[in-house]
Structures are given as structure tokens and as C-alpha cells.
Length: 275
Image (cartoon, rainbow, N blue to C red; front, top):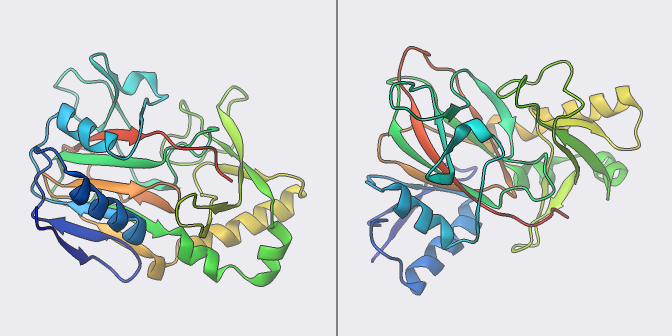
């Protein structure tokens, strides 16, 4: 395959054309895709007609497939598959159905966050439901020196309450909600670069810092990470398959009419413990 790779924004993101994911990838082609992901952080592969098995196979080139922790979002035949959808007439169990969704990094509340996520568009609304991606490398480079020094080697607790805050943070999480303390500045295991690793949806507090100061610092980091110049906004088309590096990006969803159908199929790749 002679791939065509073009940047999608100054911040991050690239489109790969002349790629058919119904076909097996040879090592050279996968190497090009892998290197493009490390460089651009988000890859958009348009005009695909992939089955669950083919999407899974593509994800497996990058590593071991992981299984969602949201039990009601699993397909019995494919427990690693999650449908991000508000479509209720196809007998599928769905999750994250409607509404604007705050910036987050997938499974940052667990010991082993996802390394990468693939998302395939089956149905999309005519307007809205776009996905925003933020370059967390750029965010780290913009963190003031005083904050970098203060938070060097510090951690923050991430919590995700499936019952209360799937798309927006609530005032209080359940004590049983899964949680994990992650490094505030994460080192990418392949590139060696640092990125901001807190997010508005799931990060709860900085370990070892007084509550109000922790809240103030986190808000500063959220606002900085979500600057427009660090963001690429993807407007979905049916047949788009996206993969993003979950170790150095965050993503969010824009509002859409809940009466309009939206269905995307997600397969994720297991990651290492953050450091």
C-alpha cells in the first residue's frame, strides 16, 4: 500500500488515505502507521467498511486488546467491544449515549490506562457530536516553571463514577467508584516526552496538597490543556476509523441532538502503568 498521510491541524492529527483495513497489514505498512501515530497522536482513516473482527485485528497490531469496565456496554460475543451510542433499536447495550462530554483520557482512573483507542463511525448525526482532541505534550510545554517545579513527581487521584458522571463531573463520587493515583506529568514510554496527565472529567485532587490549592492548580492545568491552539476537532463521517494515543492526548465530545442517531464502535488497546 502506498499511503498518503496529511496533517489535519497545527496542533495534532493526521489523515491516512489509500489504506484498506479489510486487508492484512504487512510489517512495513504497520511501521508507517505506528510512526505516524507517535508523530501526530491522532490518526483518521476515512472510507472504511470494517467488521468487528477487522477493527479488532487492526487494534491488535498495536498490542493486547483490553475489555471495558462498563459491563452494560459489552457485546456478549465480543466483550472487548463497546458501543458509544444512543441507538436503542438494535439490541445492543450502549454507553455514553448523549450529551456534551468533558475532556478526559480513557481509563485514567485505573492502574493500566488504555494505550490507545480505536473508534469506528457507524451512524452520525448531521450536526454536533464532534470529538475534540487535545495535545498534552503541547500543554506540558506551556505549564509555567513554578507549577512544573511544584508538581515534579507529584500524583493526582482520578475517579470515575459510572452511575453518576459518565459525561460530566458530579459534586460527589461514590466511595466505591474505581480510582487510581496517576503522575500529573506523564512520560511517554516510546517517545520519552512528557505530557500533562490530568483531566476535567476524572481527576479529583492532587495528593499531598491542601484542597483549595489543589483545586486551583488543577483548574489552571485544565484551562491550559484545553486551549484552542492545542486542539483538533473531528467532524465524523460514516466510515471514519480513528485511533489515538491515549498516553499523550485528551478528548471530549460536543453536544448533539439526542433525537438524532449516533453510533460508534470502540475497541481499545491495553496500556502500561503510567510513570
